[in-house]
Image (cartoon, rainbow, N blue to C red; front, side, top):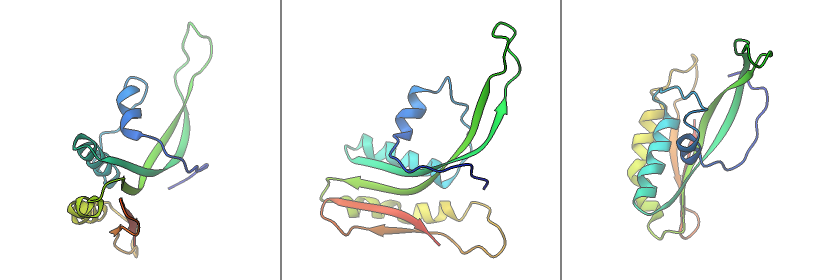
Length: 139
């Protein structure tokens, strides 16, 4: 995937998509990242402090048609979000809760078309600290 730059930061993608739906052109495509966002929504609805850590890839910049009243072209960034990890904080049953989704996410990862020779991806559960668990994705 072409990548102009990458930054690491926590962004609440669920809230961003909900509050900026008019400005964002969201491609409704099923992927492991979309499934992670759905899981975060499910877990938050159940009262958990669930978060998704993701990478943002700037794919390209496109010029929109010239707007006659502005007299100049508007530009927009086309970007992609790829899930890196899904985590729960501050819950004694965090490991058990995320364990429910581990197989689901592994299957989701392997539905994505890959280049020949790529290794299958796995969702790995890590609960090395009390009250915290995360699922991260690796080959």
